[in-house]
Amino acid sequence: MLALAGCREPAKPTAPAEPRSSLRVPLPDGWRATGFSGGLQVGPQGRVVLQLESTTKPLPAPEAFMAAVVAEGVEILEKESVDTFIGVRYSMSTDGVKRDAFLGVRRTGPRTIWCSTTGSARSEEVEAAMTVCRSLSWEG
Image (cartoon, rainbow, N blue to C red; front, side, top):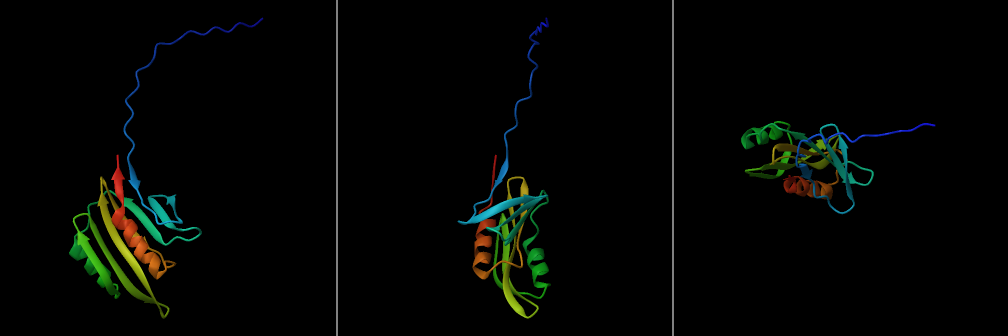
């Protein structure tokens, strides 16, 4: 015959749980976000049109940010700079094909999020990508 006996150990004090913090990414209908090391890839089912990368570095100076984009030889279509967001929509030619693109950076909570469209982004998706980047928020 086997007998098992158990005795209750005194409860060990536990550290209080830290509140969870996270990046809120409002996506257009039909878009999905997939995580990768350091960020998210976002777009309609089966395609990535926007990449988000997170850092703790400060927001860059708007003048330096815009100068770096212009130095790439692109045509600036739209630019925006406020306290927590810098963004530029531009047009570029690759292999004789002209396409729109977007590069932006948003400071929210303790994070700085870099946003950039990919080569597969269509013109109307570039506009949606800009809206996503502008609308990022930190919860927690």
